[in-house]
Image 1 (tube, rainbow, N blue to C red):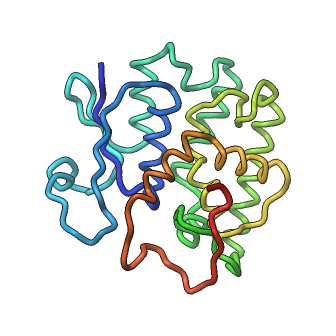
Image 2: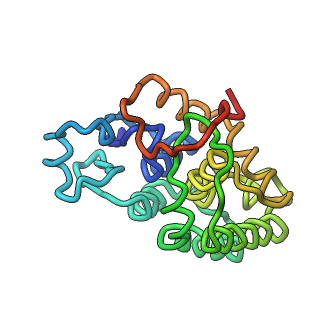
Length: 227
């Protein structure tokens, strides 16, 4: 019972990272198909699969094509209830779903100003008021989850859940733009960056090079904090 998972370039495709982490962290069998979307070349396979040319996409073992990370996540929850993709506790599960939905539709200032890139850490980036507001909201959400439901482990709800997959690209944005956050948030960013699955994803991205580099900023930079 193996799925087909179509992803974009790991160094830059934040939505693909979400979908991939759900498969990887919960041991759901998949075949990976990397469809480059940042090299400036036409991609006939992607155009055929998705008129919107958005990734990730998932094809179920019975041939159903599902796009969008939230739809992919909920489809996998239905098909693999034993894998514990959401927290078991109803209160924790409700908050986790709320947080994933808010990530799915919100934080526009942070997303726009700080695209995910896993190559290096920019120095001297100046956050706008909108970005600072998004960071404050993130800190509130992460602190709420950790204080209410995170005592059993290092993730937002103790054990890893879909919520962590959804917030992994945000942790990468914070690290990649050297954004300053408080202790709980900083610890969570470090937890994400040192996770073996995240490091595996970043290593896949480093196998490819780009000229020009997508989302490049005219700022000095230093090496990524976790090799």
